[in-house]
Structures are given as structure tokens and as C-alpha cells.
Length: 400
Image (cartoon, rainbow, N blue to C red):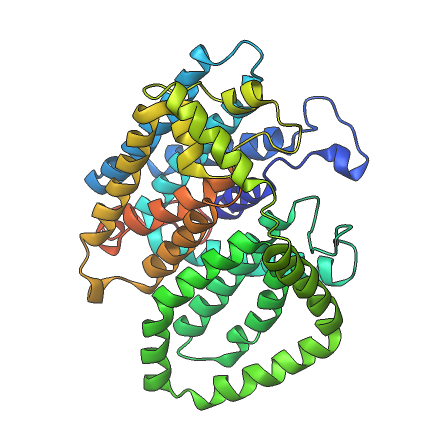
């Protein structure tokens, strides 16, 4: 249950009860309730297991650089502009500290189960998001699909992660098409989100995972999935074809190609680069971008993770970001390519997708799943997971 609670707390993001017409003091931000439950459950896990978390070398080597980056970003609030609203950003960073520590500790105890449950959560979440938006309740004024109060860029991430989960269970089951049948639906949802950056990032992991997919289909037979997917796609197209074509013509063709609409990303990137050049060493501090540029409530951040870190954290912050990513890559690469497990690969592809999407949209907190997936793939490698006690079916680490 703690894994499910962690995923729900992670996916909830900045969801508030006021979006549902409910107002409860203190608990309006659902993270208060979710994170309280996660921390209490995690404390009980440690108490009953009698095992100290984060005691292995791989966990420390991967987690410490990430925590140092988050700590530096929190520290940068001390030199942020006076009109910067740092409370929200600092609370986001503290929330990410909690999430990465809990997930890394759980992966130490039982990497396989943590990833399997997380993939189930991804798969179910993708279905819930798709059904909600397909019912017509989640479309924006421009026709872009959303769900449960999140924006299109959040929606596309849920859809693509749902496709990764579907592919994971397809491989894990030895080629049962039932798992892969949901992929065309999630692909329609991803396209219907109208998120250009999200689709580019999705194309990137498709290229990376393509060779493995081809080898698997050759080994287990590709006729059934290749024949059935177009049939499922045809049914989907009959149901949603008009909506998809309207969005493609207006969002991708007319908006992007003809009108060259960049959603003001060029302006944001120019402003972000300018702030970095003005304060190249330590940056302007968290939330300094919005406090200085004041481009409006819809443009509070740069929508580019490396550039945001550089603008608000300077060269020091950018270096810490690169070191954190390098430490994760180095630990993941310790396992020879042919020996890497399917769960680790699935997490790596999920993390790479969100990393790619981070170049086009999102603030610091929107990239929390990237850090979680990279840590699950690296710190929770099979060689590490074999040593700590496994999590029992009740959720408590079993005795060694």
C-alpha cells in the first residue's frame, strides 16, 4: 500500500480540493494529507523491518547528488529577489526530497515489486485519464485533452507513461496482446493533448526502444500484434477521428508550421538565458525568473529544466544538475547492457521520456517522476535489490 500511496501523492501534483468545489483549511492542498500518510507508513515500515534505509553504496551514490541539487535550490531562496514568492517553490522541492528518499529506500528493499506496482499504477492512471477526457469532460477551449484539473502537458505524460507500462506488461507476460491493446488508445490521448514537446520526447524513447521491440517480436512472433493494432486503431479512429484531425490541423499544422506559434517558448528561453548571463555563477534564486521578468501568471517559469536551473541557480546549479544525472547514468551503466532487467529498462525509458519533455514544459515539481524513475532504475538494480529484505505482500519488509 505504501507504494500506491507514494504514486498517488506523486501524481496528485498541485491538485487542490478547491478544484472540486471543496474548501478545508490546511487540507486544501492534498499533498498535506498524502505526504502525511506516506511518511507515517514509511516510518512504520522502518520500525517493523528493523532495517535502516539507504545503507547500500548504489543508493547513496545516486541519491546524494540529487539531494545536494535540491538542497542548493532551496538554499538559493536566500538570495532570490524580495518580491519572489518562494514558499510554493520551496515546498515543492521539500516534497521532492521526501519522494526520492522514500522511493529509493523502497527500491533497496525490493526493486522488482516497487516497479511492478508502480507500473500497475501508471497503467490504471492512464486508463482513468483517458476515459475521463474521452467522455468530453476534459477538453480545453482549444480542444486539447486534459483530465482532473491538470494541463495538457501533464496529460501527455500520463498517456506516454501508460504506453510504457503497457509495453512493460506485454514483454513481462511473454507477448500477451491484451496488455498492448491499450497502447493505441493512449497514443490517441497523447496526440489529443496537443503537447508538441511531449510527443517529441515520446518519439525519442520509441527510437531508443525500437531495436529491443523488434528483437522481442521476432522471437515471439509479430503477426498477432501487428495485425491487431490496426484493427484497434480503426475502432479508435471511428470514435475520435474528427477530434484528432481538428486538433492536428489547428494545433500542429496551422499553429506550428504556418503561424510558427511557439507558445512563447522563444521569449521564455531568451529571458532565461539573459538572467543566466546577468548572474552566471549563482543565478537569481528560485522563483527569481518570474519575480524579475513578470511576464504574467501563465509564464511563471522557463519551461526548460536545464535553462531554469541555470537562470535561477547559475553555473553552480547547472553543474549540480549535470553531476546528478551523470551519477544516475554511471550507476545504471554498472550493469552490463545484456544483464539489465526489464523493470530497470522500463524505468529508464520512463525517466528519459520525462527528461526529454522537460526541455519543453514544466517547472521543477513537474519533473519529479523523472528523478524517481532514474533512481528506481539505478539505485534499485537487481544486484542491490537481492541483498536487502524483500517487501512482503502486506507491504512490510520480510525478515532476511
